[in-house]
Image (cartoon, rainbow, N blue to C red; front, side):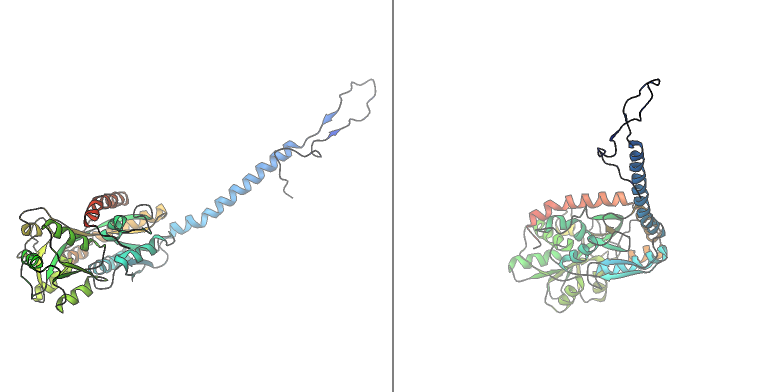
Length: 368
């Protein structure tokens, strides 16, 4: 039986014991106190040793799991509907990441609330490396300022793994409307409230980009219509229900090339080689600088084991260096970041959240 010591030995443990009767010829040593304090100290040490050993043993399975990762499929949440720019990039990335990891990467579209529903699910997931999010500027930066009551912290609730680059925003017009961005904005001023534009949702980077445009153009009363992704918005544009849609260059190019819609302007600092005939927004604004990039990143829940983060980061660098992927992204107007690090990605997200905060405030837009 394990004997457990107390801070003050009980009376029975250290009770005085009378010495036996000693002949007068021998010196009397008096009463001796016999206290088994040494035994009890040893018991305490034994108990502490057992507790320490138990704690170490409890950590062993977690360490072994991190070292064995990945031993099963990895779930990559894309918080927007299928067919949109984020979904297209996410699937291109996930397919090649699976090769680098040696395990399937399952894409799960979990759309809603400008991407925050799927992103929140990842923030609350078990930090074992098997649930990740294909984050965007909307979900990882704008949300910090847009949400009236944020349900997750864009910095504290995630482990950032890699910045994956992105593509520029583009403004696509209905063929029945003016054939330039300036002409469309002038038409909106001539008939306030008569024209409307679509975006992937309230609080998305593309929504705020259009609000920035309206402010930079001196005001344009064109009504915002939010959608659950760029795909449904483009469908309504083609049906004549919208005057304009704000999307990405990659999403706009097929419609522009086929003549089904008109690419009005691209939010880059110079004209893109993919559509050299299309002006930049800056040209429309008389030289006023105007850029907007829909960027992406790879992240997981806060608390991912360092071993898992290191493996994911290495696999992501291998993925982003894939020549076929770089070519496919270039066709979408996306410029990849090949040598990103977890530390640089976390710093980038913080900087983006700070950069967009005053823009969100000026636009006076909130997600309820």
